[in-house]
Length: 451
View 1 (tube, one colour):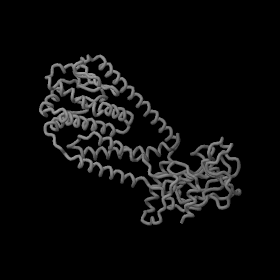
View 2 (tube, one colour):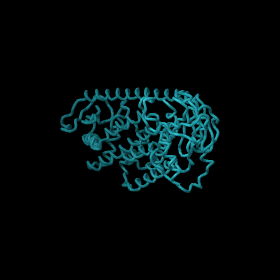
View 3 (cartoon, one colour):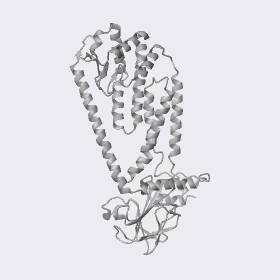
View 4 (cartoon, helix red, strand yellow):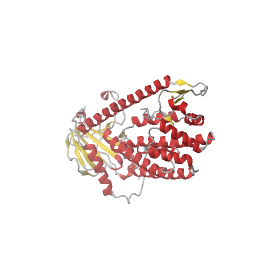
């Protein structure tokens, strides 16, 4: 466990919550009077994950010659903010992060066990239901249970319809409507979609907007199923509405935790039922193009926001230089050696004379200075936060001449070369880190030669 967990929470988790909330709020507003397209909620779900998408590459350098319009004070403020997060009591943060991760997995496991328990109860109810041979066919089994629940579809690969006890008390036309509605759910694979959303919102319970999207998906799914059932089976709208009302009056909600596609879902409240009945009786052919256009504009706005927040890899904003004036390189980046148990070297080792000053490779802010924060193997270490998401690390120093929070310029002395920590001799271990990934230092040094 390391401070990368904190970076993940700040840079990805919180933006995920924010983007999911924006996507949910915008789409709820857009579909306020026309929530009849379930698929659009998949797009909203994906839109929330934009903060996890990276459009940069460690091996790609984007050269921008004119950056005079950028406010340097603002950039420094952003660096100070990131530095304060990186340097804050790493050990305590790691313990807290570990506890949070363990807590998340334990709670998620319990929730999944609860889902499995409910699924097993539904399976038991389905298996104990009496088949109706005259309504069943080779593809779909139809059975009637001993409980007065809403009709629902159970199963995945071979779904079947489970009807309530009051089914036999309904008029023949109403019986057909209930079955036709469930058949439409099966044809649209709604029973699988509902199960997918239920598992997903259980696993992603830390994001409340995923569950809200699930509810909106179910609302849209039922509206679509009503519309298509009426159209494809040529059902009178008023007869369909009466069948729905009969089912609502007679049904007692099962504790199925929305695991199944059903005629009147437990997610739907009184207002939803009124809206559903209104849509059945007074359905209008609203343009799907208008909805798609509004949603596309929302996605475009979110994408633009994402691109603004994701700072691009711009290397020539920094005036890079070597961390030592006179030196030789004893070990290159990703070289393999027995002393490191044949693991790739994560940096570059510089050798220079005793007493040589170690210099800052670029302008930046000191966020670690000393031997108390990182692993003892590093010895006296300086970590500098630079613009563009870069960090540089200097370890095994004999002494450190800077303090945390101070600003240094490229070429400014930050310490003296040494052999503190786990070192085989006097040398400087130097690393360049970009977005929490170590990169070959020669890539940033070579950018200066391009100008």
